[in-house]
Amino acid sequence: MSRVLRALFDALRLRCPQCHRGAVFASPFKIRTQCPVCDLVFERASGEMTGGMVINLVVTELIVVVVGSVYALFTTVPLLPLLTTLIIFAIVFPILFYHPARSLWVAILYLTKANTETD
Image (tube, helix red, strand yellow):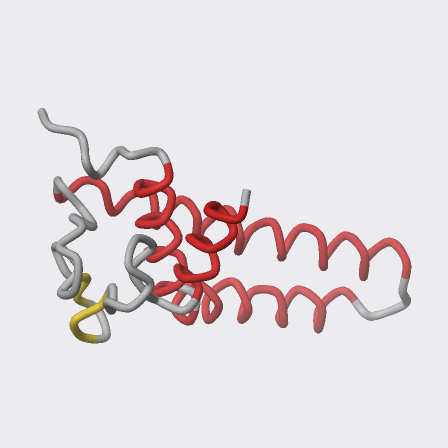
């Protein structure tokens, strides 16, 4: 269990889940192909980035639905400001959560050993 938690923690720190030191991103929107320290392959194929996109989408929509439901059902906040705030959040949060979502996907690939398999 500690291996899983450590890999997820390292992902949130944008570090390699195997060596815990190498940076996952080379530049703001460019993920490295492999760890510069331990050579762990982060993405074997270009289509694997969709996993990070799914994580980003699910987390964003989960937050919007939960917060929107709680405020709509249990408070007297007017609907228009609530919807405006949630729409702005749904646009801004995925941009800010891009790096952690992609890095979490790298950690999931590492934990399931999907990035070390040979074709």
